[in-house]
Length: 193
Image 1 (tube, one colour):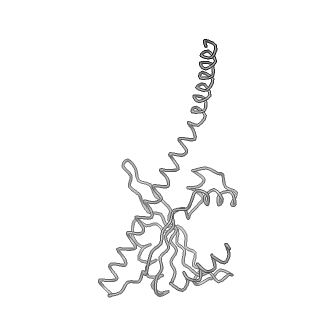
Image 2 (cartoon, rainbow, N blue to C red; image 1 turned 90 degrees about the vertical axis):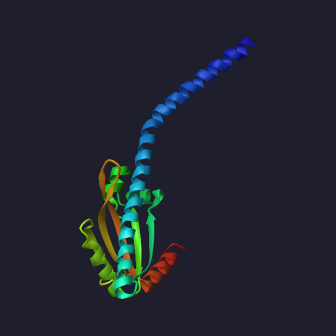
Image 3 (cartoon, rainbow, N blue to C red; image 1 turned 120 degrees about the vertical axis):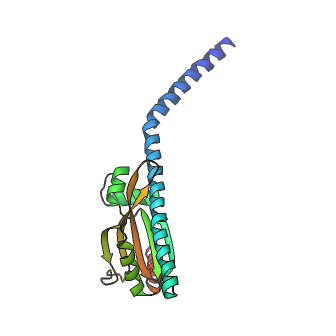
């Protein structure tokens, strides 16, 4: 019986030694996981910031013009698998810093309007706000993609105020009409079937 106890203690020491070693090996990954989780939280905050701005503009239109140019707003934060796939496809390093630097569409908002003129009006009102910085415009309405896709894409930065710092975060805003959105949804479903 003494031998069984000795074997158990030796096995326990061996298992515990591996466990401690495993924890030491995983420690850097724990930091990366925390930083990723924190960054995604900040991207969600950036979406809330832009969405609030859009909702205020829509409310203002309702009071002043008795109509709402924005029919609805959809939002999303890119899924981690999609982030990895896009970084890989574009040949960028697979890292948190690379993700932040090289991808503009981690935080995305789609604004669907009734009329084309509303798209440009909303885009102009949003981008002239002093805390919104326009980085890039892609006008697929005036210059549709070869497959017929139409939408106005804006890449902006907005400030996010955390407990101890301010971060400028990128958000992609897609503005389109109901008809453009329906076409894009159908085209997307056909392409991915």
